[in-house]
Length: 532
Image (cartoon, rainbow, N blue to C red; front, side, top):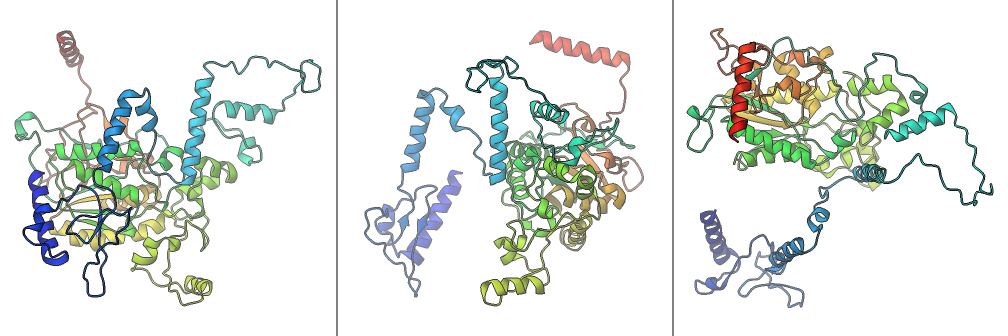
């Protein structure tokens, strides 16, 4: 790191002396470059640096025609003072470490409601909500007990409120009684089903000490491979909101999921030649954290909107629970799980329409122009504004019709067929499309597939099968992760080209231990415990 800093400083001095400030060899010794503070230049028409104005609030340095955006040493002093406060003020760390990740307005509102619910749970430890209310006579009943009758609807609503659910008697589903055995999708979780895997997944065990190098890492994998990872959890995921093209960043939990995935891949000897991801922050952040843990932030990243999540139209940003209550269970499932069903479209002036996002306005070039949108924008602005045809809503089929061709025409041709090791960081519905293509999953089955957040899915190019990585906990991945009803189509026997079983599939969680083996393991555990 010191050598890198020294090299950076030397390059900077050369550039400064030769091209910008024309500083001599003697004067260059007086220049200091503080860490992490932007230096701003202004140039005239001949690209000569303009000396900064002599203003009281400006911070510059001798021999330099530039301004510092911050006084050198100020941040260092602030951090020093914060450390002193954290040591001297009780509770300072707890207060200052509250959730600081950027949130959308609806995330912030729901996060506040969640905090208020937690506060209510805390208060209930000290307040008896069922205790009789003291009557001070202000209700006009002169201290007499108030007689209250509750209808069935009100009584049902109060029960829902006590359990933390929404109370809205105007929705049809409020008056419906669930039938026994009916499967319902929770508002903020995937549909939980019992594992229904015909073929146990190929799980590669953590390398033993015998095959680890001096750095504790296993031998580097050289063969072409595709590793697919769904982004870590976002606050939208945790609050049960339709996310789609909404640019929700990772929650703290999602960051840890991405970091853990990077550590696991590094431990198993993975390296990559190229990374593909979408234009959404959560997928980009996941790729960055994975690469950071693998010491590979320098890897080339290819970003494409074609790996974006499905566009949920006017459902974007709405609570899944609210949508289910308002439109009913049947319509909710159709929008969320229907292969060819589109949610209601957004308008051309909705903040959720991609045409109002500068990323897609400026950089999306591989879609045809839209006559309708061009007319709307041109009339609005009073001048010709060419607008491309961007999705206002997508079905799962629409999402896959942009994702699969991109994989076939770009990722496969440019990387996989060239023997490169590929990492793809994307969202659930885009990944469903990739797996449907790679594993030949039928259209009618793909909607039942769940993709766990932050779990590396290893696609072996040679054996054309999906593998998982042992995390060292001894837990069966099928018991830890939910792959949904279509999880049985993910895994097949991994075989070498000669038909023999892949030697990497070293862990079989379906094998039952004999009684003697279980007793041996228990005795080992007791021996370890007694020695601690």
